Length: 96
Image (cartoon, rainbow, N blue to C red; front, side, top):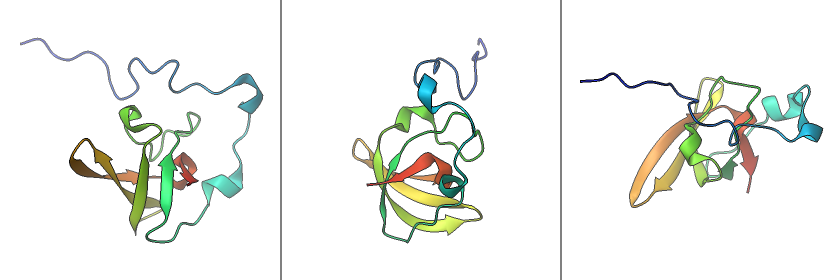
C-alpha cells in the first residue's frame, strides 16, 4: 500500500489564512478567555497558533463546552448524526 502524503494542515491554504487587516500579534484576551461549562461556542481557527487547533474540517461548526482539560476545553459538536468531542484551545473559540 502507498503511505498517505500530507499532514494535519494539508490543502488548507485558503481555509487557514487571515485577512490582510487581521494579521499581526494575536490578542491576549482571546488567548486566555474563560468559558463556562454549557456555553455555546463556534470553532474559528486562529492560524497563528497551532497549539490546541481542531481539525480544519470542523471550521465554523457550533458546539457546547462540556469540560476543561489543562488550558484547553472539551467541545462537543455534531458531525452528521455522530457526536464528537474535540479538545480545543480558547484562542480558536468564539462565543455564539
